Image (cartoon, rainbow, N blue to C red):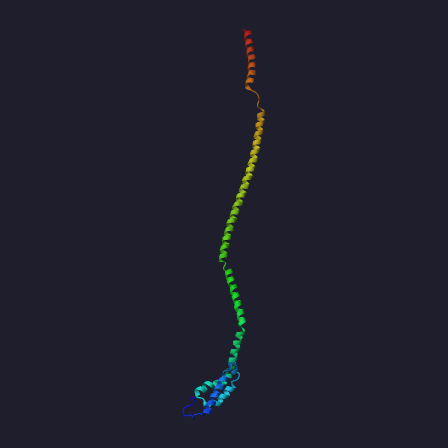
Length: 210
């Protein structure tokens, strides 16, 4: 097989065939899962011990650790356990991912609610509008009070004027009753007749005395 060192005796065909069979056997044994080999690789070690002197050093260096794989048992078992745990945690990871997604959605909602700048702007506008309405109500109430006072004054003035008119009307009525009815011509005729009598009496005296 071209594996003999210089100066070594050439192995017989039977030995070469036996060595090849042993190497194939080791290869088959090494095809087992590594998790099984780290538990027990004694058969590989046993075969290697039988053929180690027939192997070149470079191949012996490569194959010898394969007979001592249990040396890696603790690390391999721990690594395998971690892999199995990771696989068993796939549903847990999916649940965590879903919870993170929901949490991110809630966080986004919280951020939107925490951003009160727009709400504050609307609140300021509403408060400003309320102040304007309050001022308008205050002015309207003042105008209402002024109108009520004006109406009350007007009523008072109207009452006073009514009483004054009534008093003046009563005075006029009283004065009107003092007016003598009739026509001056009739009275002048009466006075004229009396004056004729007076004049005739005077003439009569004057004629008598003359």
